[in-house]
Length: 534
Ligand code: G4P
Image 1 (tube, rainbow, N blue to C red):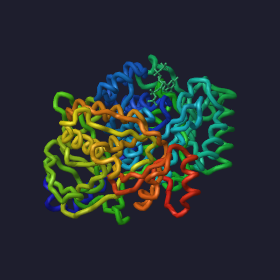
Image 2: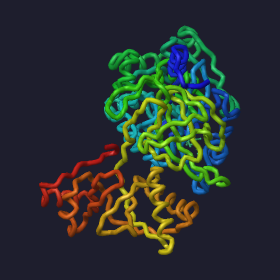
Image 3: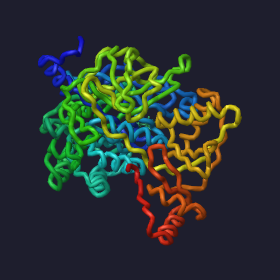
Image 4: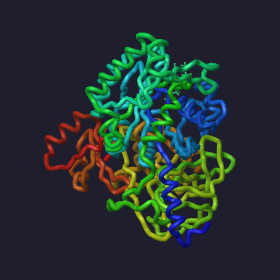
């Protein structure tokens, strides 16, 4: 259908489609079970078939992304894309995020493209370092979070202690939607508080199929489970008493977090999570532009690039830009405008990509993710639109902690070297810093995690035929500063000022002591922390 005229009927259809979208990401500290849960969710929605009959890393590589040799070698997932499936007349868009903390910048960018996050907590470990960083990023984005306490089939912490930890460390009020029956290590099922019933789980074929669930009334549950049941009711009652009855507004406002219990490996509690997403997670809604004006979902197509991925298909050396649709309807073949350059972009090759699975996409609605192939002119953060111009806010760059100088191994290949580095910077693989002092030949690469440098080295050698050398710099800390800091700190040991490609001046310091010394000696300088998110 052509979009030349968005008829009232078409606009109302777009509203309806946006209203039934749930776009979210599962995030967690590594090893909490994110990949296992992703497969279990997909299994429930019958996308994959027999999700990870396995749930082990070795088998998982068959179902989750294996785009780069490095991922295979390390058994980690570096790339992000989206898995779409329908559940109860709702279209679920599950955006994949890398499991390794070194690629957390990639995860943070995905969080710019979702409407809700599912935070997975390992029942035995509670809130871990990366869990806390991710909570922080969600908070800064006002992103509603559903918390899932996973691995309840294994001995772990006490449920009430976990609730206290969440309240104290994240400031979010826990609002149980389900409560575990049986202590961790003895998972019998959950009290489904909304329906006031006991969902009893049964192990089924090592988790290779959807778990069988029987439902009991509270009276039946008391008889069936005895003290396990009464303990669960008492504990959940305590949490509700000291916090909130379930309040969807407090969840959407990022003040409270619905709580669910699961064993992703056994597919326990997964259906309950899907139901919570359908019933409570926010649908795709008007997204504010750079000036803070929300663009109605029923206006002509618009979206933004949250991820660029190259080399996903070695045979084709392709380059895919992932767009989150914000308004209107995307139709394959439409010619859209790139806000940054004002240039037209033909969307002939639009795909849905998840791991190795690709499908041509013909239409997409607000909340959906479209992969545009051969999109090397698109950068992370770019806005695209049809008819009515829009610019969405830039996706913030995160605080780098690792810095290396890059040089071309072969000086005669400097042109390829420069092109490659710039391209990787546009894709968000690395941040790029320069100074007159260091010159053009030796830019500084900045990363949140050191493995990002390995990706750069690999891509430079294989995709750009420009092998390079890297030399580690001693800095571990960055602050946003101003141009006058560059001469002021030119000869100061333990510090250096460089210009990042987004126009920000970054002051780098060996360590916190070097920073303190300089703050003391140069009280006039602006040195603003970047945090995880500026
Ligand atoms: P991640 O993506 O968050 O890094 O976690 P992943 O799914 O890879 O899970 C990490 C390990 O935890 C996996 O074990 C997985 O089987 C296990 N796991 C995930 N969810 C559950 C759960 O609900 N219960 C239990 N008991 N285990 C769970 P693995 O990689 O196969 O290693 P191993 O445990 O077999 O040694």
